[in-house]
Picture 1: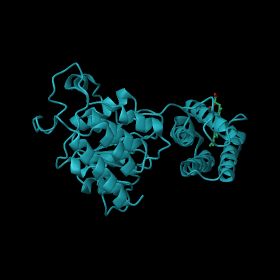
Picture 2: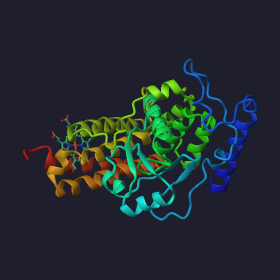
Picture 3: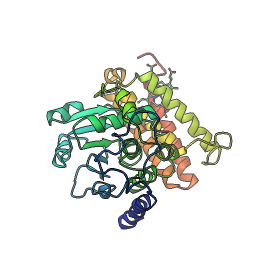
Length: 336
Ligand code: HEC
């Protein structure tokens, strides 16, 4: 789909949201419609009228050189990929960003961000879903910390847009259909059905619920150790084995399984492992063994997303497996 097609699709969604809104005309036009509502019981998400801010939904931000997949979500949120250098933080600053929210598994570069006067918050989410409590935390960040908030995962295509869209629904900035349209616009692959489902099911949060949510806003959620990361790598690898056994389809006895998400999760946990204290102590040679595994896991994910031919998937899987064995033979299967 071309960008203009995507924009047209998005516009259609926005208009749909506006046209089916019976209550939009009566609703007072406040900046934060959901937040002025009294506390419990929670009302269904009100459709959002296409205000000035709503028209900025899904607008790609152009003219950037270091950041990719960058899209505006109203005045208070921007979604995109991970800033990976001091200069990338400068690009964020030039867009007016004041808070950076990572939902990626890897530890964010808090030092570089803070050196530029940007605050980091880290709420890692999986490819399976943005949990309701994470949605609430993210919404609270957007409500309470200085904005605009730049929400990012690794590539800025799947988890980040889902996190941003779900928080926007909780804050009453979007209705769920608009949230889903935003994800499509950002390029979230259809394979990540859990991410789409959590946005489609999200509802506007009342002020009481938001007030009660924790507001400690951690800048780094400490990654667990290497063993824990490996356990998760292995679980994802096992599930990829099931996918392979089902001729690279969804296994009949495991219908919820999303093949590409498993490869993504595997890559994520390899990254987690790389950041553990143990990995750092093992040093550069260990990192050299880890790099190809990470690349191959990402390559398998891309191929699964793209629906590559079975032979390609098979080759990518075998290459990944070889990188597990290569590293284990040096670092796991004998005393260090
Ligand atoms: C860069 C090196 C490296 C790569 C790549 C790697 N591992 Fe590991 N793995 C380790 C090390 C080191 C340990 C031992 C950790 C410890 O006990 O402290 C380990 C441990 C494990 C364990 C045992 C966990 C436990 O319960 O103690 C499993 C299972 C495992 N890895 C699976 C995998 C799979 C599957 C892959 C590939 C998809 C993989 N690993 C890739 C280094 C690696």
